[in-house]
Amino acid sequence: MSKEEHSGAILTVDLTAIAANWKLLRDRLGSATCSGVVKADAYGLGAEAVGKTLAAAGCEVFVVAHLDEGLRLRSALPDAEIHVLNGAPPKTEPEFAAHRLIPVLNGLGDIERWRRFCAGKGEPLPADVHVDTGMSRLGLPPAEIDLLAAEPQRLSGIAPRYLISHLACADEPGHPMNGEQLAAFRRAHERLPLAEASFANSSGIFLGADYHFDMARPGIALYGGNPVPEKPNPMAQVVRLQGKILQVRDVDTPQTVGYGATYRISRPTRIATVSVGYADGFLRSLGNSGSAFIGDVEAPIVGRVSMDLTTLDVSAVPEAECLPGGLVDLIGPHNPIDAVADRAGTISYEILTDLGPRYHRVYTGGAA
Ligand SMILES: *Cc1c(COP(=O)(O)O)cnc(C)c1O
Image (cartoon, rainbow, N blue to C red; front, side):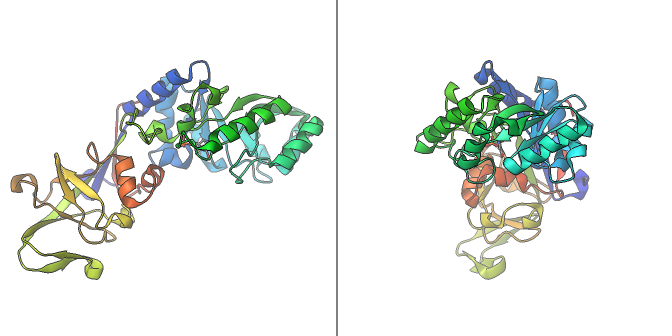
């Protein structure tokens, strides 16, 4: 991690906001358990700092994608219940057991391998069973659900923790898939009444109590992404990204900015060059479409985003507020992650998970 004065930009992660977001979701869930999804290094924000913050707020159940992520989280959180979505690759079962990681079993083959491992150990070890209700990605497809319901002994010797499934369209409350998946999940749970049930991601929590079951798995909402895109964001902002101004120049002759000469200056314009580029994880698709803010004033990105540099039209910013060494908000109060994502043609998840190791990171609040 680079030092503030050595780096091109400062990424501030507000751990207090993450804790507040988790509590808001927990309160909304009532009696259902609120876990914390911290896969992909807590969506790029730092799984250890985020994990400890959530644990201090009362979170006891955590979700990661890979075994590696589970092992790292286990060192930070010795007592947490940790679920591994992508399951246990062959031969890694002993590591799951040794570190008390709970694999998600995504098919009958996974179930059979875990059953044999438990039999070999002579103890029923916990695992989740994932049923596919409409993602066609991971989880038991309908034919395997039928088989498992007909032959429940396939699970003998396993200690099922949660029956889980995942929503495809939870961020679109009116989408018919939501009700269809809910019905399919209920049906699967009736036929496989082997465990508690877990269904909702962040947006799913806002679809109503029918979607809550026993445990929810929010990720993006913890990190400030809007789980209800059609409404004002109920979550607190977590991330601020401030780029440093390297140079400011006045251009009063017709000329172009950046690679490909994609932006043409036609009137006197002040250009500020900021030391952030796509190699930092600042998406190239923000060229000629995103905006920075200096105080409350918008400074559009002009020209393409380069590897290490981004150019802004700062003509509207008072000269004294836009000097070399000054900071501009690339993500901030006026351009939160969902707004930046819109301008980049992507989703807030990708904005966060692309935040690179080049940034100087500052954690505020929390239990880091
Ligand atoms: C990533 C993921 C989540 C969290 O989803 P968000 O939309 O970020 O809340 C929950 N469950 C599964 C299976 C996931 O892959």
